[in-house]
Image 1 (tube, protein in one colour):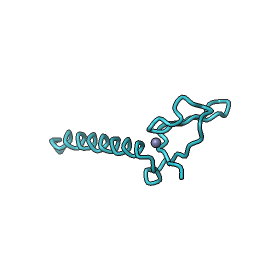
Image 2 (cartoon, helix red, strand yellow):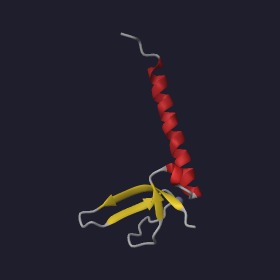
Image 3 (cartoon, rainbow, N blue to C red):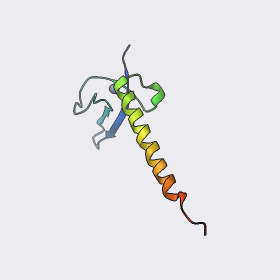
Image 4 (cartoon, rainbow, N blue to C red):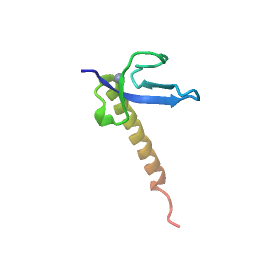
Length: 78
Ligand SMILES: [Zn+2]
């Protein structure tokens, strides 16, 4: 069974070639490279390194949300 990786980045160029790579680096810099399974949904990802990356990313998002919320906590009502 092959792992499912998180698609960290993908694009299609004007010639119709598509490139993508995963959060753990699979496919990075390797256009014709190995076939790999990628998903856009965290629930489908089975690669541990990609999951670790997602966890880190979610923590960063949460942290920035908290920062925004605390910034506005002292806002005066108009
Ligand atoms: Zn991966």
